[in-house]
Length: 174
Image 1 (cartoon, rainbow, N blue to C red):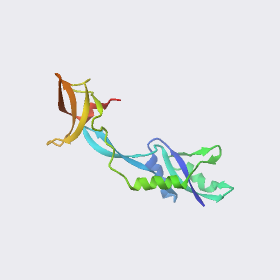
Image 2 (spheres, helix red, strand yellow):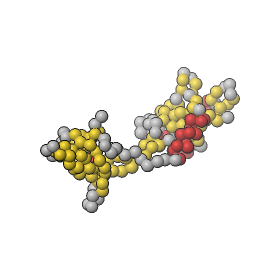
Image 3 (cartoon, rainbow, N blue to C red):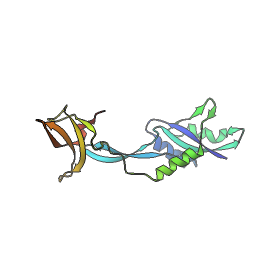
Image 4 (spheres, rainbow, N blue to C red):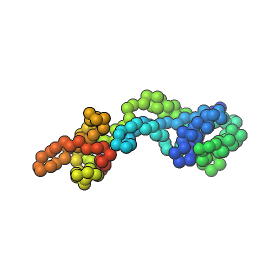
């Protein structure tokens, strides 16, 4: 009988651990999330683990009473990218099959990545002539030269003005 467990990986090596475990014949699952990032002044979509430093792995149990078959567990610890198998004392933590199935279902039905800024969100301008001024994020637009600009509503001389500002020059206000 196979049960789901959790492998704790080394920092930022979830994908490498997943690939190395699958190469050894293990059934694994790494739920990911697409997020919007700013890199060199441009927006890009990055795929990140939903649970950083954790990968689900399906392992064979010897019997219902005996727990995890220690022979199937030994190679996991020496796999590149793996730090350890998550355990409670000497017993590896078991994850409910329904939870992993639900995560897999949501993983398959991915939605558009979450935007960095939401409309009507308070932001702070961090660079440029308007540095230190608070505003309200309106929208993101692609300019004719190919650069992205965020339109921010600021109060200037008792008037609300929408200014195009480089998105990397904004910071969320909470």
